[in-house]
Length: 236
Image 1: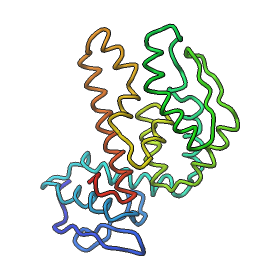
Image 2: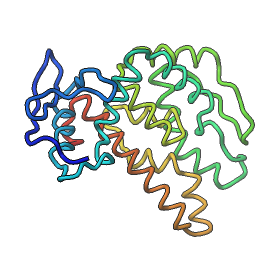
Image 3: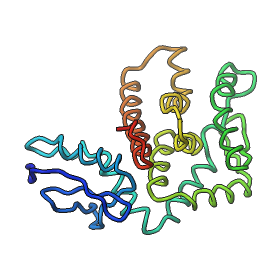
């Protein structure tokens, strides 16, 4: 598609922000008003439009796509994504460890345990850890409390959490990524601990590394989007 606009601006609208193209307000892909909660996010999304050339590159609209997902898919019915996120918590990768006598177990304890403990302390829950890959149900009280915690999040936080947790294959890493001052590089490395461990032992697989780096790019963009949505200029 050819570029169909000349000017890109942002306007304030009732404590939210909206992008305009040639003075016409943008709507979401689902046809809703595309109102975002911070000027920082609006600025970043406006830059996606301004940076386009004569031909639109739809792959360069990562912030727009996450915003539309929050507004079109999550805002109308948050309960559906909350159900999905509770299922992520039920099977969190960080709860499944190697056998205690294996060297990998010590690395998992060093890297994963602080993340789990941080979520447990902040949300007053307890996760069950297990050695091996056999499913272990999490306590009903934990899942109930987490459901209430998720119910207090806005659609933008839920969209960010779902994206981050999915890419990291860990609900708890996603939850930690939502916290102010989170270190996305450390969290991404924690999410890939076992793959990185194998590379230490056997060397790098170029194809696997390429796939991981592609996912890392998506993770970092989602993290930046969450930061921007809550008004952090640092993510821009």
